[in-house]
Image 1 (spheres, helix red, strand yellow):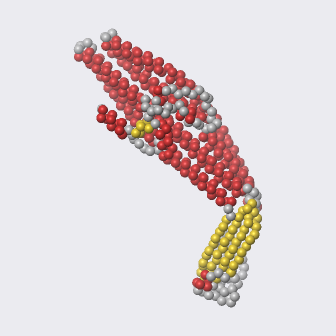
Image 2 (cartoon, rainbow, N blue to C red):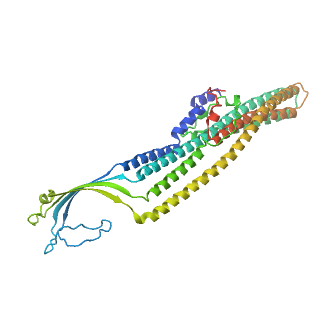
Image 3 (cartoon, rainbow, N blue to C red):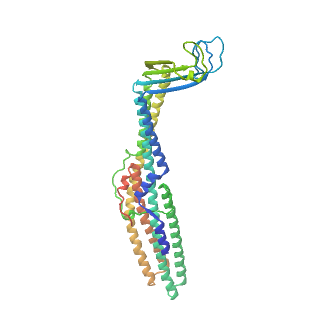
Length: 453
């Protein structure tokens, strides 16, 4: 048993609450996924800011094409077609002629009635949604971590309770065995003591199994699976948390998430409304053209060198005014759609606020009940210990039977377990209070920074 105990101390990795919380923040997949969304939204803001810059398009192409042209215009059908220039020749020529075109076009929206700025604002609001979603996910996960941490602590304490209970059962068994061998006690007493010892062994085995499961669950939410992870007690069961403040919900991360969605919808509706207005752009373009068809003689050269050189240049400077008049109906519908979405998120916000206020009242009531129970349980434990010691002394002196001793034995075991359960419930009530208020510092400020029992 000593060797096994030494092995457990070597392999077990004891971590305090702050270590587990930090590890889960850095490694749990859903938290990392939400952080990736925040990073993506941040890059979207940077991408939208480039709309302030002019659009610069550079095009260079070399082609080999037939040289049959015809006077008249045609609709490009979304650029599906072959551009034809020049006068028609008296007869068809299907031999390919080399040509080239290089152009540089600049389009700068110098005045758009705030549409570019509104687009950046929408991107920033989406970034705020991603950040609020990350904060809410992190907060909810940390609440789960603390909850499982408390469960692991309680399970470890119950193991120690059952270890003490086993030692007590062994002590009674030894006393009864000695009395039975000397003829002072009946043989049935020895049988009952052995049965109680076996039951204590089973209770210890069950409590160890439950502690193992609790540690594995804690390991899962920490983000790194570690079958040897053990929660450090941090004196949780030797201090009574005190918090008499009323629970408020105004700063809860969930409400911040819904508020960010409302703000983003308002920003989108503002952008949709601005799309009613036109845009003014400064435009500039330069073009260089070359072809195997001579500008001066009209002769055609079919070699690559003749079509690869430039022999025509153009430029353009101007002001562009754009207004999608037929799109006004769609823009109006988009605007109204975003307004309804704003109403939706507002109603959802109010629903969450109502739920959190109800949970806040329940958390305060549960905290008061847990406090009262934690104050009464030590008295019950002390009475159970005294009753057991008296029953044991009476049994050893022959003044009572083993049934009376076993009854007090049960009461003491239940009182010892009840003490740690009541302390666990008190800390759990404080966690619920902290989770409902949206501020984990309400819980963490009550934790001691020291370690050990």
